Image (cartoon, rainbow, N blue to C red; front, side, top):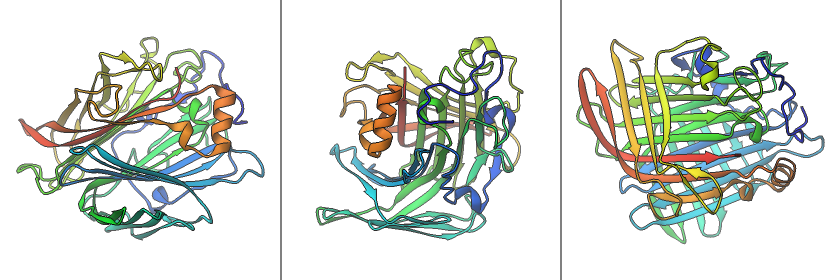
Length: 423
């Protein structure tokens, strides 16, 4: 399928052309080494692949390191590699942001070496894993960070086997026949260490974090109209007495009008996956839920009884972007324990969201087209009219966890994103 086409090649009505993993698989899926290795697929049209590390420091400072590999699916147009780095201090509201297009990229499984940075990986899914990131983004910003996943906190994908974590687009789910796919793999519980140096001032980055590896095997304006993401962590060094250190992650996307349970124009569908990990229970629960339009309640199989949801409340119009953004966002998880018996539920509310940077914990409104490589930016903006924005929030928060008949209020920080790709 040409990436310049603005419509799906499988858009006939009354034929299912979106298959959410949350309706066909369930529960904790073990990761293999291949799951987190770079795929770099350059023979199947538009592909975007990312690996992102997030961490929160003891004073609440939030850090993101993101690698983006993009291929536009056009012969003779090479793939691009990009690093985006951001650090934000919620007390001072100071932030530093850098984004560079790297040259000389050489990928080798989980390792990556470019002229501007290097990522070295050690370990395996069944042992401790370490990603060591060393970068000189310019003369003022240098990174030397290790992200460590403990051996007793295994990563996950939603559902077991080769199809775990994969939602497919198109009337046929087979790899050779589908229009595209989305996949996410997570390390919800990890630790950061090392140093970030900004303007010759070193910052100790000892903190609590996570990692996600995601692939969009289709043009992004066809994959989703909306995204929600949440990462909650206890404050480093302030573990909860009952649960220990806690992480909660959630990723949700909503289809465009081109894809749905009964084909194009049959209603947008949300696929939401999440997990809660603690240092005393790792993993604690893995959640997944398909959110259907009212006209399609009987289309998909019912593979799981878990709850996994991101709810926007009291939307307001952002005059700058034109999008209706939430005044409050509620994230919810509920599922049976991965190990042992009993159900666990959790909820966290970001209740001061807004449209003005610096208020309500809004770090930035990211104009995505301004950050991606030129050829992708011009193609998407000119041909599809898409205008993606990501609203990034970071706030103190309380995750209320119901476990073993008790409600445990866990203090920490919530980083969340509300992304809008198209109307």
